Image (cartoon, rainbow, N blue to C red; front, side, top):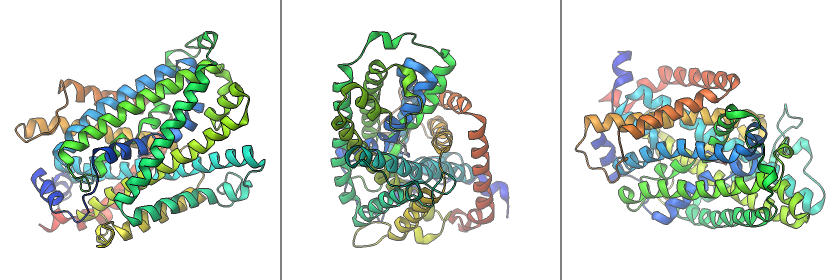
Length: 465
Ligand SMILES: NC(=[NH2+])NCCC[C@H](N)C(=O)O
């Protein structure tokens, strides 16, 4: 087999669109639900948990770290919006890369998406367990013992809460995309409400003194904080995994992606100002559940902290649900292309969902969350995601060149400047992540290439043609 030819073969945009038009998934999602899907996948452990890790790195300037990370996300979001409107399939950036950069890069992109979705959802499920314990401690004065709430290596045997939340999401997904979207919408309303409540309480305790010195650790701290916080923006792209289930994908996908990012950015910045304004930044060190800690101190009444913990649990549940959803749909697309086994794109006629796929993905994620210590995982997720986002920006540039006339329901303004800035920002953020993260990433990529050359390349549907 000609390795080079395999690696660079591309799937024509027209084929992707035809496939989407004659897809087997049910079209049931409107703009509201798509926006909720993206907010659902974005707003979660980042703001509730990772904020606590970023404040010690950036100081009060964490507010600007949020802005910087948000701008990076925005460049890529614009590119996602253009491509999602143009190629409304379920494979997200994997499919965009297949149409522009060839099969090998598409595979690499898909493999990064497994980090962004499959692996990250496992770490998110672990965060869910931490908040559950916080809540139990606050309300009943006890917590699930480490043996049953931590993986081996972190002082436990199995992480039961993580398994529970993944299984709950699995059952919802099996019942249908519409049902899942409905449940998600309710959870999104609760989580946005929770953050608004947090702001209302914390703002009353804001002291100007807490903002000085604003940059205790310098600009390096600010950008390291942004790289950490980038994790909290990941997920605005989730709507692009619903291309084949959207009622009007060309119109609604770009809107959902941009709208969700706007809402999330505003909320994050408000929460960050409120949090570091209410409490001296040094006090965030070592706080696993930063926001409830803030409320606990500020309001002095454990009820608020308890409410926040409930909000966080709901918030993170919706991340688990929507990100798990995204992973199944990306694999669905890869399976239809032959790069992963065909059973993953079989659709159950009754529920209109990929059943086997959902079971396999949930099983994998639950096992990972239950038995693997996922400490370093947020950063590893970010690096893989940044890589995929970078590729999306490149794909926009290439398609503008190769198919300038093709219909686009949304166009990135100021192209090529904006997508180029997008690539640069993603690269810069990747470089801000530490060496250990790069090693994990390199190992992950090596494994991906092994699978591609050992399996996927030969099974590819394009190989048969
Ligand atoms: N593909 C994803 N949406 N991954 C999970 C992202 C995590 C989300 N941004 C959070 O802060 O919890």
